[in-house]
Amino acid sequence: MSGKLPEAGMDALEAVSELVSTAAERLESHSETIAAAFSSMNKQTEELAYRLSSALAPLQEFSNRLASTLQVNQEAVARWAQQGAELARNIQRFLRELPEHMRAACKELADEGWYIDGDFGAGACGDLARAIRAGNREWANEQLVEDYTLRLPAIKAALFERYPHRAKILRAAFAAHERGEYELSAPVFLAQADGICLEVTRHSMFIKNNGKPEVAKYTESLNPEEFHDAVLTPLRGVHAIGLSQKERPKDFSGLNRHQVLHGETVNYDTKLNSCKAISLLSYLEWVLHFDRKEAIDAREALRKFEC
Image (cartoon, rainbow, N blue to C red; front, side, top):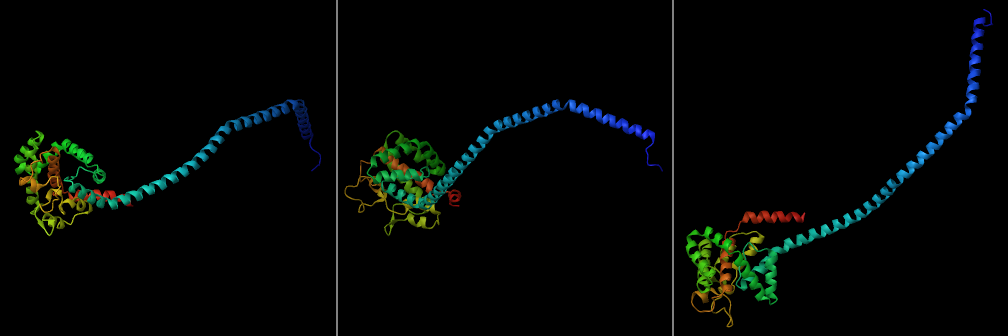
């Protein structure tokens, strides 16, 4: 086989060579245009990069501010958590001390002839007891008279419903009270309170054994939860309303059952004394029918704060 290309092959090579040469000449003639185009692209790229950088600058600033704000909020959250823990500790302490505070307040108010029912909160009882202790007896009496006057319709309804067999007598006594005939209302309220206590507990509030009212035995048989135990305090001791002739000081001027029902005094006919007698009725209607389950449920709900 010969090493020379055929004549047709030579012609093809010469044609290709001519095409390459022509393309090179054309490319060279447009080199400046191509270079200018790339230069323009570079400028556009640089401008785009600059614009992107400018557009992203506020975002970066926002990011920096957000990081700073988050840091501040973390510190605030830490402070709030600390304050919340302190609040929880205070609530726990309050719950532990509440029965004792209520016991002391109920005793102090009973010593003044007032018997507090379930419509009074621990805070109100404490405020009234502190006022009396501080010598602001007149202010405390005014507050209590106003409260029982406002609640009179509800107190009457509760007593009539609870003791329907006593409703006729109680209605007459309340009517006398509302007419301002306290000389008639107070003795009836006191007599009915004595009868209600004896009816429900089989023990008297005013007959004493070993220096305590008989009804104290009833309270000892209840096995009450803490709050109920605290509000039973007035039934466990001798207070102004139940003092005997020997127990009353010479200058005694409070409401006393024995003095009123035995005619030993004729100056008991005041709205204050009638309201005190109403408070005893309302207290007995509440405390002698205390909802133990409701009290326990409320106590358990409060104890969630101790977690």
